[in-house]
Amino acid sequence: MPRLSAHGASGRTRERILETSLAMFNAHGEPNVTTNHIAEEAGISPGNLYYHFRSKSDIVEQLFGAYEVLIDQALLLPAARRPNLEDLWLQLHLLFEAISRYRFLHRDLVDILSRNRRIRTRFARLLQRATASAQALLTALAATGVMHATAPQINALVESMILQTTFWLGYEMVRDSRYDGSAGDAGRGITHIIGLLIPYLDESERRHLAAIGAAYAA
Amino acid sequence: MPRLSAHGASGRTRERILETSLAMFNAHGEPNVTTNHIAEEAGISPGNLYYHFRSKSDIVEQLFGAYEVLIDQALLLPAARRPNLEDLWLQLHLLFEAISRYRFLHRDLVDILSRNRRIRTRFARLLQRATASAQALLTALAATGVMHATAPQINALVESMILQTTFWLGYEMVRDSRYDGSAGDAGRGITHIIGLLIPYLDESERRHLAAIGAAYAA
DNA sequence: ATTATCTATAGATCTATAGATAATGC
DNA sequence: ATTATCTATAGATCTATAGATAATGC
Image 1 (spheres, each protein chain N blue to C red):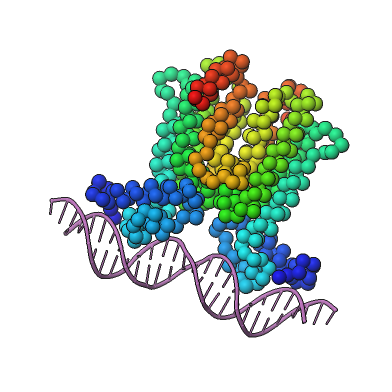
Image 2: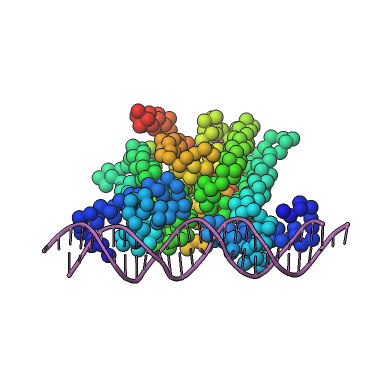
């Protein structure tokens, strides 16, 4: 077992394995990347890889942990004041950034979760936190008069937003038969998700939203 | 090669392989089911399986063909008259039914498509047909005054509907850490998708939609 | 004769570990 | 002494095929 403290080349190798795994998972899909592939790409022996990680599942779990931290950071809302449309936009931006960085998870979400109970439980909880966060944000927007929606409408909106944020990447990959799995146009995804609010905004807030979008595009 | 005409036990075995594959793919996920598993479950030798199918990919492709037919049937719109809200409901019902029957495809959509270029192309085209169909339907609803929406609003709606219909099953599987992959509550999915229209309906049409939903639930 | 099926297996992986060896830090 | 790494390989699959045998239809 490697010591947890920084220790010469050890920590660097461990990090390199994680980075290489992430890059290869993202490029080819986690199910199609073996520990041998990772070791070869990282320039180490398969035995060395297993010195640093118990199993391939262990690698995936470590990467999931980092992803989870990013998502939770993205979900943070300002504590001191009521959130506004800009906060929602920023939140979506951070979420899409995190998802893009760990896109292998969203690419094969159901399969990865089916093969690892711990990740399955943690992802289900993460979705619950995301749901609660989105609900709090939209409820605050309704309370401050930025949008006009009933509680059931907000619930439906939240579910649409969470579902589409979770699978936007899969949708893009599946829609275009020539899609090569590279970065992807996050901007379109964000614009689409936030566009779900438009029916619930009055004219001035729609213009406000359009202004945010234009500023973001530039 | 088996002859295409019905031929004694042969056609039955071929059918049994397909049915067994479908059941096992749906139960455990296509990536986790091997040709050996299928042969054993179907009560035949692996050699016999390969007498009827060139490869595992070939089996998946045959199943995809049947799925494609079901989806295209579901997308058919009445030719003689303008479509109405009931037609949309029926269309969604048939779509969810087809997806549920071939749920293994939607469970691992990105991975399956990445491993088979022919299926990838066909699925991309199928999504285009679904998009065109939904667009025609919503445009007709707008033209007959059932809903009030501009062309860009309809485009956004169509994209939301297609994305959420495609991944509703994955969403359900991923949301509940104890989900066992069985049938799933299609009703909730349909209600959610069609609920996307509500902001674009006036009061009388909202009641109409609620009535359809109540009739469907009973 | 043709079609359908089985047995047996080649060949390619893949995960993970044992055991030897090299590098590092006190 | 401890940590990191490599070599080599066991053991488990998995896909797909060759070749023998059984069943079927004319």
